[in-house]
Amino acid sequence: MGILNITPDSFSDGGKYTQIEKAVEQVAIMVREGADIIDVGGESTRPGSTSVSEEEQILRVVPVIKAIRSAFSAELLISIDTTLSGVATAALDAGANIINDISAGQGDKNILTIASKYDVPIILMHMQGTPQNMQDNPSYNDVVTEICQALKNRAEEAMATGIKKENIVLDPGIGFGKKRADNINLLAHLEKIAAIGYPVLLGTSRKRFMGSLCDVSEPTELVTATAVTTALGVMSGVPMFRVHDVKENRQAADVAWAIKQAREYAHP
Image 1: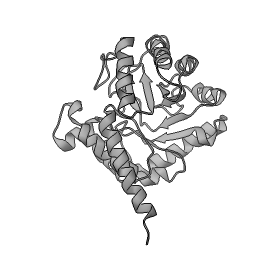
Image 2: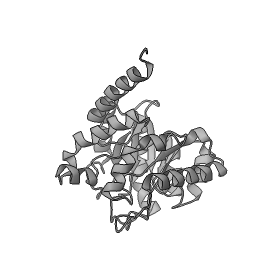
Image 3: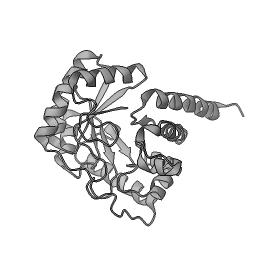
Image 4: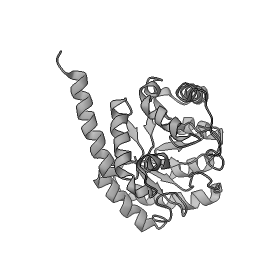
């Protein structure tokens, strides 16, 4: 999943793709490099970010989604990164195929109804707090167990709303209301999240906690670090990865997948 932020203030690429032509050019690059899904968002969710109205998000994302849909084959999937049902509806009507909701249906409960009505996949992410306050003082007794249970609860709520089980994807929300140790613990136990029984999306791309491990402050210098987490994710049973740098992470995923297959199907 290649990231396309139609925002002026995203932490890594804010303001780069607000023009439709630039956005379509970036999508073409990501498709060449191996993206299967383009994740379009009209609101930054970096720590401390402010919310963007439904109307403004629609104005940002719908023209871009329409342009992508007309420029590329139907095989290219488009996800809409939003917590608002109105934005999701407008995006789906414009040609999006997937809803990616960082609030897991808690920011606007009607988004679950929309996913059910349109019969599309929805990605449910765990977040403690909101983007405005999530990094103030996140706290867990057992981060892996608590997040697994929270994700199970959100999946059950989604199914109760009428969403098919096969249309649910879970995201542990790396960097969203987690301290560095929490993120590392989650990455060390991704197989437990995969064992819940739904596909898992991993989003570590250029995240700040890796910079603190690598003594790097510039997000664009964390491409290799991100690719390492992608390879580890593949080995742990994660099938989907949301990234800025498609080529490097696609290579990491493909090599890790080949190794994983060799391990699983090796003769005794």
